[in-house]
Image 1 (tube, one colour):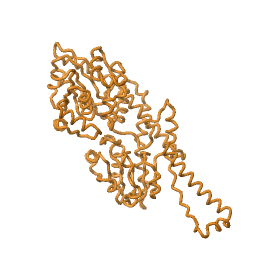
Image 2 (cartoon, helix red, strand yellow):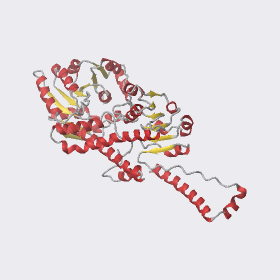
Image 3 (cartoon, one colour):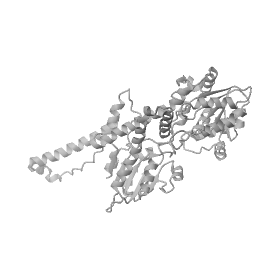
Image 4 (tube, helix red, strand yellow):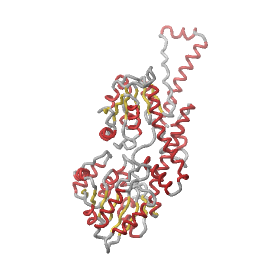
Length: 490
């Protein structure tokens, strides 16, 4: 059976290494950070990803998966080498490929057998061509090396499933041997029905960034519509539902709110713009600059709305803000380009007291934004808060008790910047519930019945207009509750 090395054991690499071991291969993970390699060797995952700690620890214990720091050992060990190193953005948004070249420089000269090198890192189109020349110059005499590109499509929070059950496999190859080797590696998911797309290297490089740019476009589009909804009284959630019934559009990624973040979509959009500009096609992707701007504006919208609500008599904002969420999405502790953390730090910079709670991302958030206060529970974060911002849609936040939190907080306003909370319990508990582009009607004033002894007479003798008004209020209340139920069902 083929033996596999995974070079770079960050989020992608550690998950891929554990996944390859689960598929039955003997795997060596390599990282230039000894502390990270030691932690993984002990079965500890240094980031939050559901299901990965158990999977990794199990295969480490069985001896099928191990980690180290030596590229020489990897060169002598494996038949297939996966490159999973980081390609962070540079000053102009273009990808920094230095880690990729460094990995090849340490690996290729030490190869002792014919092998396949597989790029999984997200790179600008044309990178594989340059790497092919580099590999040819470094390969020892008598050794044959193929280069392939196999982009990853992992969703944070679901990465283990996506590794073992990919919704598509893209093989950018130049030889039949490279395709054969990749089919061996992914034989189990292919047998289970995962479709395979065979293409050349440039197409494989473009597929990942194109997918992320398209998803970013959908998110920014619905957020642009949310701004129109706020101005006109329309409801962006119902608008998205209606659009989603069109199978040419689909409902996924049409969730209006605070916008996208993380280590992929923002980086890939900007890198695609930078690469297209380098190739002389910058005008063709000018719309992506607007996509990025719309996304950033959503954060600014929440910041400004909060500042307006907390404006003091002297015109300066004053008060305490409770932030629910720091990670860029639930089921992750990733705070890279996190909209939630961006809003929190902006409000702190404006002079407000900011307290943050996140079920998983407190440690990485504190490393990035130590100026904020972090709480161990949601209720502690809300204590004496003048306003609450819901910025990451963790399931735990949907299960909070609004009535109890109302007794803890000082203010009664919550902004659901993810449009994912059910407003009814919050309204019932007396909260001023606000969303982004979603129509949330104020809870109607409860109509108290007249005392039983006088009820019939008062109804008979009150003026017709007053009786009609009472009836209309009751009907309006009923229809309001009906509309709320319909929205939740939809």
